[in-house]
Image 1 (cartoon, one colour):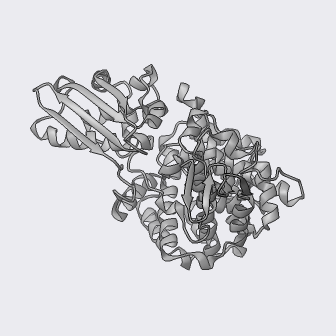
Image 2 (tube, one colour):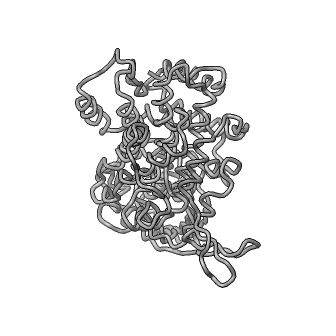
Image 3 (tube, helix red, strand yellow):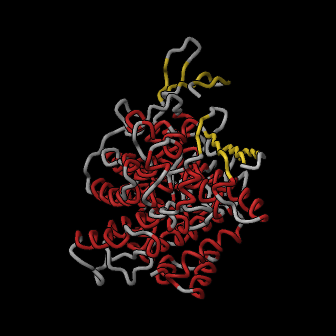
Length: 491
C-alpha cells in the first residue's frame, strides 16, 4: 500500500508520518530501529514457536546443503577455487570452521560461510519466504554456524537459535519491502537482503552494539549484490549469491568493529538500499519496523517439496496430481495431451513463464528449475519429482513434445506463488484447477514426517542412514547440545 490511514495519520510509502494537511514531519529511522532490535535481542524472546521453526529450517538446511555434494556439478569447482583462494586448508588454525559434509574444519570463517551458503542454495531446494520472494535460511544459518563455531563454548545454543531467528527476520522484512519489483530491476533479493541478515546473525552472537551494527550495515550496503542475469544461460552465479553475502558480512563486521565508518541511514536514505534496489512503490518503513521482537514475520517461511523455483511448485503439484489420476488407465503420453494453458501472476512470468528457448527447452538444471514449461511437462508425463531426478531428463523427447503444447498467460488476480492450470486432453475432456498456495505454505502445510523424509533422502548418501537419523534427533533436542557437538556430527 502506498499510504495507510488510521488513528495516527497517514504513513507514506517513503516512511514519513504525515499530518492532516500532508506535510511530512517525522521520518522513520529504519536503520537505527532495526539495529536496536538486533543489538538488544535476547534469548528470553524465544517462544516455543520460534524454537520449533528454527529447528525445522535448520534440519532442512543441513539436508539441502549436503545434498549439493551429490547433485550439483558446481560443488567441486567452487570448492577448489575457494580453497585455493585462502591458500589451502587450515585444519589446525584456531579460526578453522566446518563446511558441512567435508570433514574436519579447514576453512576460514568467511570462506566456510561462503561455501555452506553456496551449497545450501545450489539445488534451489532451500526454504522460501513468499512475500519477499527470497531464501533467508542460507545466509542466516550459514553465518550463524560459522560465527558460533568461532566462539566455541562462548556461544550457547540458545544464542545460536536467537541469531538464526533475528537474521531471518531482518532478511525477510527487508525482502518484503523490496518486493517482486526488485526482480524487474535485475536484483536477487536472497543475496541483496541476505547480507544484512548475515551481518545481524554475526552481531547477535558477538554481542555488538547498535552503533557498530549500523556501521557494518552501512558498509554492507555497498556489498549487497546478486544479478538476475544468470537467467540468460543458467549460470552458477545464483548459487554463489548467498555465499558472497555471508562472506561479505564477515568482512563488513570486522571493518566496523575496527572503527571503519560505514554509510549512515543505509536502509532508508535517499541513496540507500531500498531506494536503489527496488522500484516497489509500496515500500513502508513503518511496516518494516513495526512489532520488532514481538511479531516474527519469518515464521511465514516455507519449506520446498520440489527442487525448483518456488514459482513453479503449485503447477508441479497440480500436474503431478493429474498425472497420478490419469495414469491409472495407463502411462500418460504426449499424444494424450492436446493443449496445456498455465496462468500465473505477472510478477512470476519473467522468472518462470517467459517463452524463451531456454525455458521451453532447457539444456541445464538451472534453466529447467526456472521453467514452468519443463516442470509441468515432466510432472504430466512422469509425475512430480521431489528431488533432482527431473534434471536427468533434459534430453527427454516426450517432455520436449509436451512443452511445445504449453502456453503461459498472466492474471493480476493471482497473487504470490498461486497457479492455474487448464489442460485439454486429446479425448475431448478438459481439466482445470486453481492452486492459490503451493505445498509448504502455512495455508497448505508440509508435515513433519515429510520434512524428515526430505532430509533423510538428501543426507543419507553423505552421512549414511543411521547417522542421518541421529542428526534428526540432535536437531530435535538442540537445546541439550552445544553448537560444537552438532557441527562435529555434520562434518
